[in-house]
Image (cartoon, rainbow, N blue to C red; front, side, top):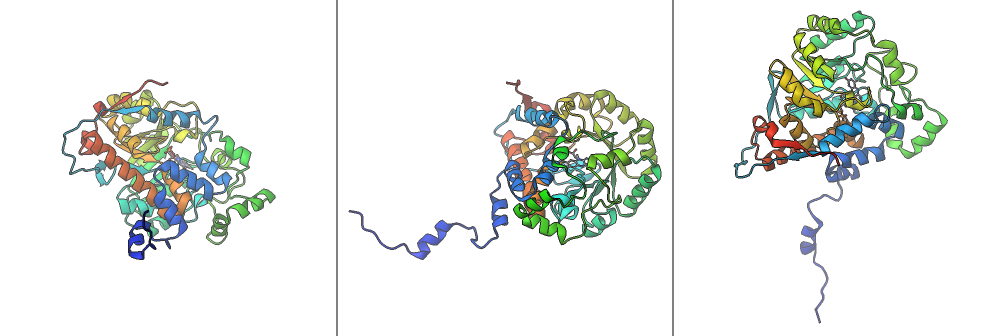
Length: 406
Ligand SMILES: Cc1cc2nc3c(=O)[nH]c(=O)nc-3n(C[C@H](O)[C@H](O)[C@H](O)COP(=O)(O)O)c2cc1C
């Protein structure tokens, strides 16, 4: 028979693992999130559903977003072995300056609604990692406050053109004065997309205290406590509006936008200029001829025109047509570092990330954004190593192929 004895502490201790049992529960949950999808699940648990849906949702039947993710899932890599990947370099040049990763944090409106730490938390992670951060016209932190809070981040400013040009011009002047180096002009939103989840949830900006909101409070006390005890939740650039984000966009932004307005922006901004929301080879050519520095092949993460083309599928032809003349960025549906690697291999000079960091933000504020970027960074490095690509330059179209849809 086997002899038994009492367990001894010095033998048991190593089995308990390195994890500090007193580390707070949220930090532990974040460190156990192994993918952006895990962060999404955590975000959903900690955020009122109308806020989660505003972030997670898209327009119409949400097919544009689903298809973008589906196309990434059909990527098959063509790895090369025996390549000595011991000195991996994931850095690249984005619009003339070095970036630690081929990633830009995309502009997202109303970020302080997702988590009270908001835009400064996201920008702080971008600064720490060494990638650019974009502040939206619909931001909840002002141009100057963001610059003061995170002076060492590469700051980009995203503009929606307003019906009246003078407030737009004023924003550009403020952005220049506050050291923003790049302007993103978004052109895929002449009118707001139809976001059914927001309609069904009755989401208004700022969120209204109704009977159902009060009921909801009891399920997400920390979120509500933070909202009610920090600066009022409102747009930094617009007076508080009645109605949904879509109502505001339709009221304030200019549906008469044309190529002449891109030229106006070009003439009004001394720094680099990026046109976001290009969705065809013809428009890529049109915008390239206007002398901008980059385009973002984007359908706004499926939040504008539903059933829009999938940017990743358009990328090879757009790259072949205008890639010599300007940088080509892409976004939509990126949920992993291997998605980033695939997009770069197919010709993207950088990839904009939207929801992926917002899931992190909702899951745990700045620490959650850091976790999201850490996950992407690790996945990019590991995917490149296993592909046999030692640097971003070695990510070429022959590294990937699309599998046929099932
Ligand atoms: C909650 C949310 C708010 C957004 N707000 C803006 C915005 O104010 N301006 C803009 O140009 N794009 C905006 N976008 C689009 C993003 O910049 C980006 O194109 C999109 O999120 C990319 O898709 P992904 O979320 O799948 O990464 C927003 C996206 C989300 C999810």
